[in-house]
Amino acid sequence: MLKGNTVRIRVIYADTDAMRVAYHGNYIRWFEIGRTELLREMGIVYAELESSGYNLSATEVYCHYLLPVRYDDIILVETRIDYLRRSILKFDYLIRDEERNKTLTEGYTIHIFTNNDGKIVRAPKTVAEKIV
Image 1 (cartoon, rainbow, N blue to C red):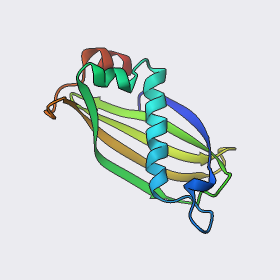
Image 2: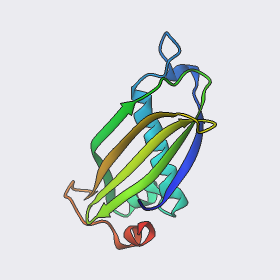
Image 3: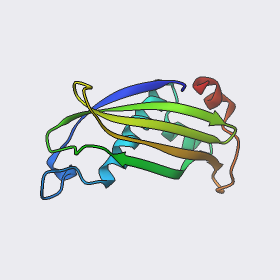
Image 4: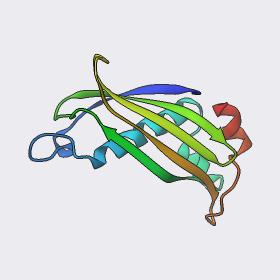
């Protein structure tokens, strides 16, 4: 694996269902928070990437729910770049409890670089240099 980071998130009431368990779709949003913050720490700001004519489109999402996340829990979203291959970028995620005693969720997302016309393109050199 390449570079990684950890983001701390408190689960808010709006993230949960009637049983105060986090709604399954929010995990993908938490993955996005981890991914965006990791890229930002590396000097890759997504808004700037878009303004330079590149998009990073999701092509695959995998999420394995191991233990429930509940209202007011503090979770740690650990994000790592698994690989960058020409136009494909894969991120791996672990969601853990605050003490890192339990892995609550694991997953990954795969993205492709495209231009503004939706054509698949090679990752920009400036991005690739920061990732590798």
